[in-house]
Image (tube, rainbow, N blue to C red; front, top):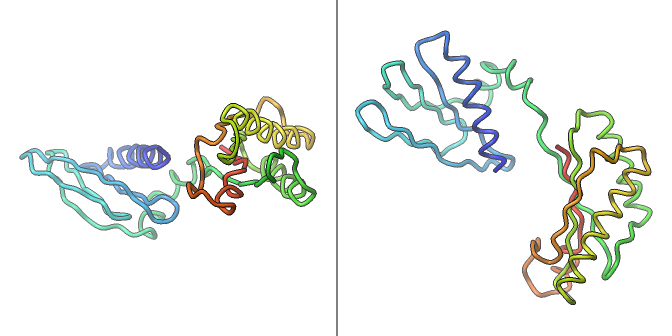
Length: 199
């Protein structure tokens, strides 16, 4: 989903920048980690053109002719610097892990949360999502309640550190979305977590 949003935003800015010239350019931007999707378009003759690599582009003339080309990160940053700088910041994500059957944050985690509250204060953040999870041990209904308690524990710590309650959204999934699906102690430890997403 993040890729689609990034791509559509970038397509929009390319369209605006191309209005003054003879056509439009669509450029495929990579996600974090370099992953990209695929864009396929047909020209006025019905010939399909596909791009699936970072910074690959399609130049589309007003007549509907399509010419594939390769941009670079540097060329994109230079051409569209003004618009790229106007885009909202990338969402930031933080993970906090919990002990077995616990929703208690330790002293180290509280210190890490204080650093996150500083990021929230220093950055234009519209929403802070606290997403609780559990491992698969025990009853599913209990796990869901525990995942809520974990999310609430993180949210309460943020609120105590002067983050507006109205900014915070809670989500909780019990054991439904494991990070690691293996049935091991190590996997369970990874799955007992809260993810904080800053948007």
